[in-house]
Image (cartoon, rainbow, N blue to C red):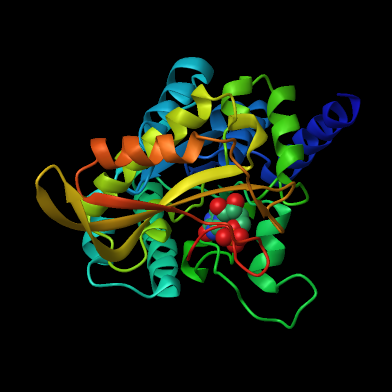
Length: 319
Ligand code: XMP
């Protein structure tokens, strides 16, 4: 595409001008945005860029591996892979308030980052895949009063002491434009077409306390849901689909026995920019089939519901 080709060249020039001969650290979240930002910056400044992938243990099944292999094997971009699951999960113990979770995760990302930055001898710039809607929604809600709906973990700058400047080449773009830029940069359709995934990850899809056990249950159910969506050829028709593990148990019957297990909510929405969204209408027997599979295959879940809420009044994520 002509426009994106031009955007790419303009941004490359801007990044070079901003960075000079400085060193840049780029935080990878596992999602499309930070990956596109990293590939673009790598094209601009090559070896001056180091990527840090902070794996908080709150990713969906297989996503961490995909990012690592994309960077190490395909692009050959220097990548530091930090396994910080223990640090995140122990800090989340007992935390149930959605904003408290988001704040803790945002702060811990920065802490882990700072530690890694020190290990590689520091850097002058920090790159992030912040998009335009992230910037707006963290400031105020569409046309409304200036109220923070959710603190996006990747917006809001850095602590003064870090003394690093931000490089955010995607700050003017919407999601569909980032995907176009990704294609322009040669990322595969499969990678570029991935559904958005929030920085705080599964923590905001587990209302109530986040534990390793509940993350594992959610990952299994979520993987079945997404597998069925792909099999049905519906993945690209949906903006985002995911499961939410509720802090509610219900009574059920399995074989001859009584069960008393967690309730899972399935969510799928259509949207063009994530700012508004509509519930996706699945064809005929899709939801009953997924429900049966999840209950039969995932221990700890005995009831599945579907969330028909639009945004507004709901948000896409539950927290
Ligand atoms: P909500 O739930 O506010 O989400 O309707 C709108 C879009 O943003 C994603 N989202 C996030 N992305 N960091 C991110 O990078 C975050 O903290 C965050 N919170 C929500 C959400 O998945 C949806 O695509």
